[in-house]
Length: 292
Image (cartoon, rainbow, N blue to C red; front, side, top):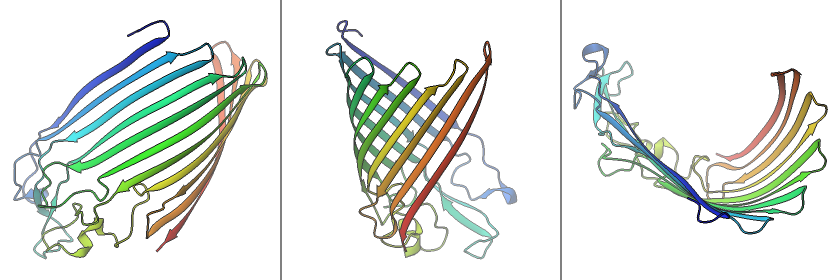
């Protein structure tokens, strides 16, 4: 929708249903004492996005955007008993509870693009992200199925672009992000069988104080730079690099901090009308410091 020549609103919606309702295998080849004949699985996915853009001046463009994605797993959660060679009960039958994992992510972004002159521009952006994770009707009574049920992250970034000549373009950017995560160290993930729950079944069988770094609270700094060179009418070259540092400031055990460095070189050669060949080389090094 165009409010004016300078201000426009765009968005989209989507809704999906995924189902699975085939009968379980029975007898010695599959599940015994199943609580129901079929999983009767249902996953509903929804998406919505909205973006407002405004050309404030000839040099300045402003934008604000919202995104929402949700995967709602509405499958029932039950305990299933099955034949197992490594049965903990010693009777040839063990059990597990299915975890209908769901997640939701919402994002909000504010950005401004300013053209310094015909060859230079700068972009400043702020992004806020909320993530939720859960299981509907979890079959382990009184327990959560995920150790990290939610997190929030704020990110601020700046990017500079320069068209040095008709053949050479350069870009560089820096961003800082801080993620704050919530944890339920008493959560019981679907790992326990017929035995009585022990402390090892709690917190995803991890030691108290350990937090998986992909969910842990984190401070991140990232630096990127790249250059593109149109060497000839046929040959195009580009070189880009990235340096990232992560600090997991609330992790007692596990990854404490990390550094990642990467370089990429790409080349494209056009040897005929509508015909080209490409080649690339990539190098990356990552180092993590852990406390055990």
